[in-house]
Image 1 (cartoon, rainbow, N blue to C red):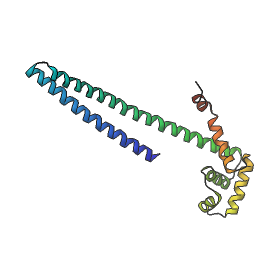
Image 2 (cartoon, rainbow, N blue to C red; image 1 turned 90 degrees about the horizontal axis):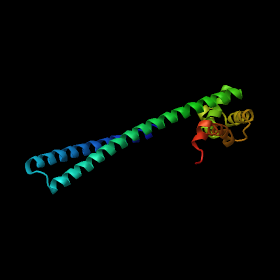
Image 3 (tube, rainbow, N blue to C red; image 1 turned 120 degrees about the horizontal axis):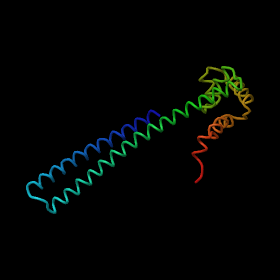
Image 4 (cartoon, rainbow, N blue to C red; image 1 turned 120 degrees about the vertical axis):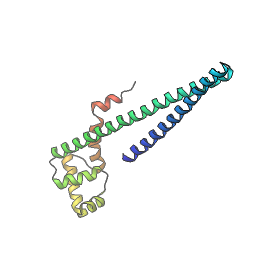
Length: 172
């Protein structure tokens, strides 16, 4: 998530610099056109310069709008991810409590949710693989799951079946 945020910040900074450069160019063309009008009066050259200045000004406005939308979209996305992260954490805590998992079982279950396999969980917990296997078997029995994929599906299904998500997936 942090890497994505940094990329987005770099992109927004680059776009902001481009908009600033376009603004300077537009100011130059407008000033040049105004100077030419005061010296030579209006003419075809002035019309071309004025058209270029207007195109640059339109680019500046569009670029500024794009940067604004990019930043606002990123903020909305971050808020949505934070909300989802909080909802998942709440759901996990609630289900672990509902199933009356012990602290060790909850720890093993959390590693299983993160996609760790038995040897990896054993290494991370400093436990024997047989112990982890037995704890996972108890977690699966208490939750009604028959495998790690089924265990994960319990949480994913519940999150995907929420009214907020379902409402966003209605077919038009």
